Image 1 (cartoon, one colour):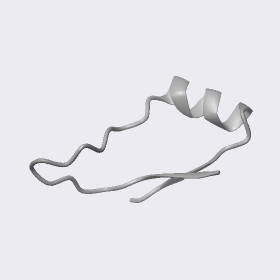
Image 2 (cartoon, rainbow, N blue to C red):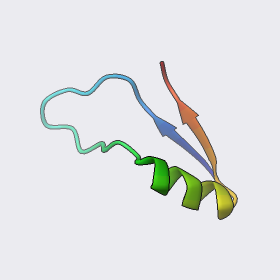
Image 3 (cartoon, rainbow, N blue to C red):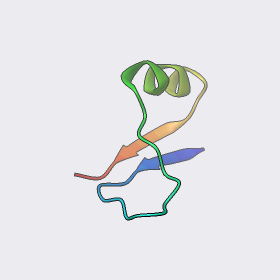
Image 4 (tube, rainbow, N blue to C red):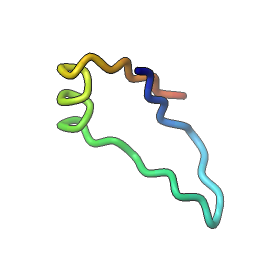
Length: 37
């Protein structure tokens, strides 16, 4: 599974940031993390 962290947010959106601890857990579970810069 791929999970993306997007750069910009807009009012009313429900996106949330990932913490470093969450990224570690997700990678260990086999997820691929993509961060937009």
